[in-house]
Amino acid sequence: MENNNLQQPGWGQRLAQSVSVKLLVIGFLALILLIPSFQIGSLIRERQQRQRSVVTEVGRSWAGPQVIAGPVLVLPYTTMVKTKVGDVEHLEERTHHLYLLPEQVDIQAASSAKLLHRGIFDAAVFEGTVAVSGRFGALDLAKAELTEGQVQWEKARLVVGVGDLKGLKNDPVFTLGDERRESETEYASIGLFEQNLVAPAGLTGQAWEQLPFSFSLDIRGSGDLRFLQVAKQTHVKATGNWASPKFFGAYLPDEREVTDSGFTAEWRIPHFSRQFPQQWTAVHSAIGEDTDYGDLDPELVDFVREQTRPSFGESMQAAGFGIQFLQPVDHYQKAERTAKYAILIIVLTFVSLFFTEIIAKRSVHIIQYVLIGAAMIVYYTLLLSFSEHVGFNAAYLIASVATIALVGGFIASLMRRRRVALIFAAILGIFYLFIFVIIQLQDMALLFGSIGLFVTVALLMYFSGRINWQQRDETGQA
Image (cartoon, rainbow, N blue to C red):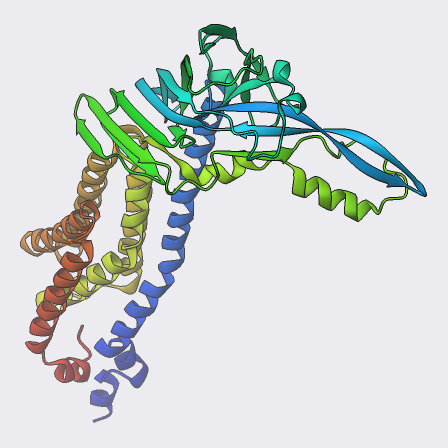
């Protein structure tokens, strides 16, 4: 009787062999594995940020994103302002600017894009020609409450905004009316855009009904090519050899065609949604940075400076539209989406292994669960590292086959039954295939994912119903 009691497993041993306790330990282990899975997400974002920094570095060396804005006709004029310093009043001449926008702008843009390689990272760059033509309408001085004598016609300028002047491949020549004008760069005096091309307008004060203009820019840049709507009627036709363009901004193309050999897009935009008038006046250098204003309140001076500073360039950013040269495959985004399903893969793998050991009547130690979980985590580092060299799809295949072979061989050595290991490897392959399908889908990802999870839960319920859990807890068998 005493020997029989010694042969019976003690309470602690029965608890250690309990199916319920093992399920709890497996669940806790799955939660612990969330920590390294979160670290994998951080690693992916770090590599993605590294790629973006490389693209930025290439842009600084080649040329940054390009923006074509304008042209804008800028006419300086003078006014006499009565000022008072202390008890003394005197008249001060101040310079302001009158801005005139075009009636019509027609842009023909042809681009040729390619990938530049730096290490294992790629950056999309482009070269192209942008031909701009159009006309200005009549100038309405009466509306601006000005006289011809106030306008400094000899200082009138034609201003064009360019995103990155470093990307200009030649010296543009502007044609205004019948005259050809050499351009120069300008940053400070007019300050209409961040980077400006300026040409003398050569106006004499003689009124005009239509003032035609044209110019052509040979440019290069990186990332995107954007245009800003400044005219009453804007027409843009853009062509290129890039097979994966993204059309973005305030306006999408009225017509577009994208093929494997390139794209064609066309915009026709009226002025109704434009956020600025056809012509307006703004104070320029009315309050200079080096001007001495005596006893005036410094806060008042700063306020007036802010209110009189030209803000046209900022306000028209909302009217921008154009083409972004996307890289064909963003493997970092897909890798990050795959990593979000890490806990699902781990849980389903552990549950499948748990059912496998019950059906095969062979116990798997919790340490072996830890090793299999580690293989699940290493899978994502394999996926990330290979995707940087061979692309996402090939990397997914390599990482999945390697992980399934490793775990399947490990199960075969534990169970000592090849058929069981093959079945478990097939189940694991189905899991990875299911995740791959979801990653490839966009709008239908949630639907297919929900259906797949529902089917998985249904199968787990079916197999769990065929197991006598109470008997296995009582016998202490896993």
